[in-house]
Image (cartoon, rainbow, N blue to C red; front, side, top):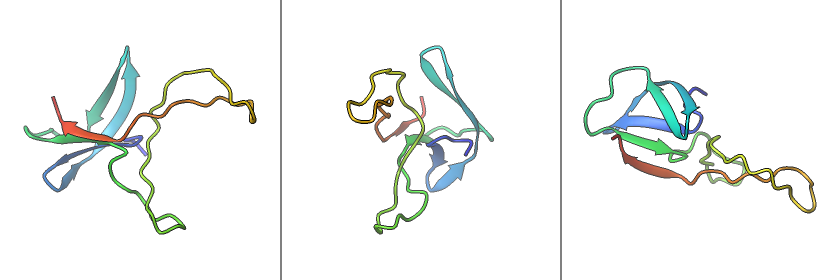
Length: 89
């Protein structure tokens, strides 16, 4: 999905996201429409679909580039960003 776990909203109205990319050491979110004052940006804040357990998962794709591998799997174990909501600066 274009938001990659990020969402924008004004009140209860979602604002579409055209793209999300890392620029330098920041995440750049490009909205599909004008973002009004007082809008909220969230990450992994809303559930997308119900899980088999009855709990809807909240997830995103933002993670660090830590190359440490797991002891049992020998595959990378990146740290994913925490869920948050905050006013758009």
